[in-house]
Length: 354
Image (cartoon, rainbow, N blue to C red; front, top):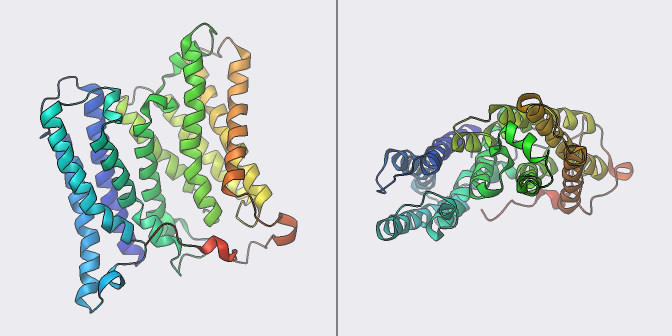
């Protein structure tokens, strides 16, 4: 597909994703939801209609030119195309579920079978531009931010869906004052919960970044963009009352972009890749604690917690880096100059089916 077509797919996915954020806000902040037919559901499902209609239209255009069967499906679009009718079926199931069992307004919304089906298929639809770009011949190993933008937007919005359905463990929803309180008292059960949410959110934020860093030398601004999108979902759920914490995550994206420029991590530079994974996580949660302390009343009273939490996050980031890239050729044997685009054949394998 052309970059323009992928960009339109990504932007229609933004409509889809923002519609879900509006719906998530309603379920989180409105206590009296009595019907399936609401303005926020309209925003959500209209976004689905727009992006699914666009995907189907791309296939139909190819059919009209004489292509048949799978040959009519653009590269990277098959999984999204299959997800469209499945999403519609789960949407109907969701209508029946709400009609018969009522509207969820608490943690139960995150475990509804119909909602889990919707979110799984929605991820496949939103990541269509990522799969399209994965092996596109014009992308190369060091794409520009403009060329990679549709893929980054799709992946970032897919990340927000994961954070939504792990809301009970989302550190980005915590307010600065509560963070300081939790890490100031070992008898506060919030200390254990915050430490757990930090570890979980660390994985949710970092894993998508490591995926694309392994595939491409990311242009500056890529991680900042992804993290800026990532904070929209917890922001919507908390009505943006924890802005300082959300800004800390965006600042962490800037630092991660600087680390990429400095370390040049890639599939051929495993040590740099591992270093980036650990340092990015360390920086993210050090900034998180720092912004919380600056706006929440000072440093937490238990130094082991506020100093150790970012270190634990950094170690978890290092583990993730090793899991994502365990067997690359050492830097000293396979490092390439910046002017050369190259990658191992194994790194060119398609992302998912179609």
